[in-house]
Image (cartoon, rainbow, N blue to C red):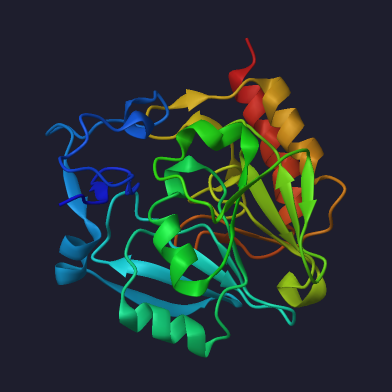
Length: 268
């Protein structure tokens, strides 16, 4: 029987096959890695047996994360908005309890994902909530499970509802996307950034990398491009990819300062 296998290292779900895929292109790319024990596979059904999701407030947004941690370990964010909720980034595990909890919060109008490392089981989430998935066309090649619900948008920005905007900033991936949420941070504006603008351990700072696990930096001109992409927008807060990885205030200043520090560090 055909199965939608899931890569145990990056969490990406693949198109249905009778046998485990031979390889995971996302993990073989130099921005990621194949696990030290080799390529391993699981399924959503297997994950549900010993993993569950938790929903909790993450400084004004509803975070959805898996316990125990699976694959890269990111948490998704439910951006609740008057005209409909947006699921920002995605996680692999989806079960009935999670679906019921999200529906009680108003469901999901659309899903947007920052980059391929967080594509996870996006098709299952899309079908569960009858919501389109918005991915930038420059990352089309990294979709391991194609589906009619995936909409590949193009250009520098895509306007959503309630003033929200998807921004193609590139960097970590060519299609790397940020979400500007004008209603965030009490109306001062917020960015949801995934790994495109990564919140550092010292949360007064952010960083920019081509590969985080393999420590490959980005060139200065690419960092300037990312900073330039968000410069027209007002934001006081940045939500990174993991629980509590949040620049809680002066986030736009943090991006500017961090970019200058980064460029000084890589200057030859």
